[in-house]
Length: 214
Image 1 (cartoon, rainbow, N blue to C red):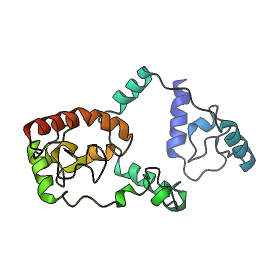
Image 2 (cartoon, one colour):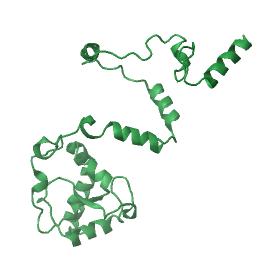
Image 3 (cartoon, rainbow, N blue to C red):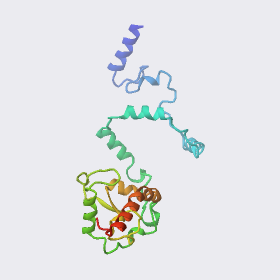
Image 4 (cartoon, rainbow, N blue to C red):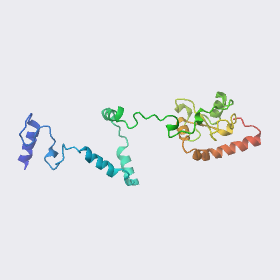
């Protein structure tokens, strides 16, 4: 048995350009060890049938244990530059599913009817934004991230999403980092309810104190 293994190793490593030897050069060993479909390709008809069969079928949800194992196995791993280049090349140009798709205007899933083009109240000035940021110690109201960790100054968010209501009044404004501010554009009722406690408490305090400045 040992002699046979050595003979196979010699043939695999030493033969060059052979055509009729039982282990042709350049082919993996699994071709001769039970891989009858090696080198075969599905026809277009077979691919179409496979696609129709899988269409609409969902993979069963992964268990929490499986997800945890996957997370642990990939923690700290980083794709090599060569691997990333191959992924980039594979999705470049017409091979990219988003090629030629322009998600602008009402075609964008985040479209809110053009609210972003509405003008702000004239009282919503840079000096007001600075006062709001200073009031909260230049930290994001949601995650607590300091402004120094952002590329740009903290965003000043309208709690009620109304660009004209409460302009110049601190009770409807809170500073948010860019990450948290982008999240507030989705599921607006959730974020409004989350911030409403601050919104209400500040309004009551400003009403009782007779001042609504930061």
